Length: 413
Picture 1 (cartoon, rainbow, N blue to C red):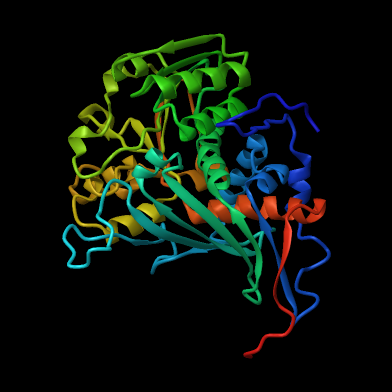
Picture 2 (tube, helix red, strand yellow; picture 1 turned 30 degrees about the vertical axis):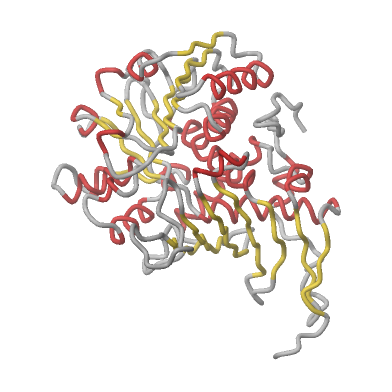
């Protein structure tokens, strides 16, 4: 096993290892199945500290797991919700005007959502992430979203584990840009630009460091000094090899001269003119852009010579089918903008590339040092299943978590 080379994100540990052999071992199903004592069903509960002990913050392992998952997506060995089996999930939203005084108002990020998926291969598990979100939580000292994840035995449907999932979700979200950088960024990338110094920015940077360990410069832009100070302090402690840190106040300066660019700031939807923009003229040759949050592009970025990669084309097709048009008004991820462009005749479906195809070797990754590549990161429940399954198997192997009983014998059967 390699030596840990980084730590700490938002008070929690990121461990990036040169090799992640335990995770490769954990891709195999344990010999002892939790279903052997049927009809009795026990499962485990993993709180946030249990999740950390079971390796949820091993970013190198998480990047490996996400790449493994993308190959399974390419093969079709997965299922998500919706008619095309690619839906992001099911969301409860609230009306502007309700006759019921206790019904929540549709304030920013006010929603409940369930995100189910099955993942095949050596995983063979099914799970669902459930969360409530409200941007006003920050005023209460809480995360914007509070997440839980349930992992199930695919054969019986019985629970295997219920997990605290804020870290699970944060790391799998950050790891996907790391997979993108592994295949699409220049190997000699040195300069990373981060718009939005929050948790997503930290985990994205951690994943970029796994994929491109030669990074030595960070450019960062944020709305508040507190978040900037926190990000910089974390970066200095976690990555001493990043010797140059520059705070910028405008997005053009942030982007110019950067090898890897990521926009990670959360914000309200509904007005595309307020989404942070990226312009073609700002980008150096060979730039890689990873966009897991709000983003808009100019006409230069619309052109065919800018490669446009999706984490899963089917995910955006499902979103586009469900949303009013233009869809980018309602979901600010740049891949939804690409779907609007197809709808408007500005590009064709053939202009899109799929990250799963690239990971599987069916489509080439970066082909030269000059091409500009933009990756849209929408987030998928199969990612939670992949990383949740690996964390669960480590917890079982190490005896981590609290054992809970569903029943010894079911009353109804």
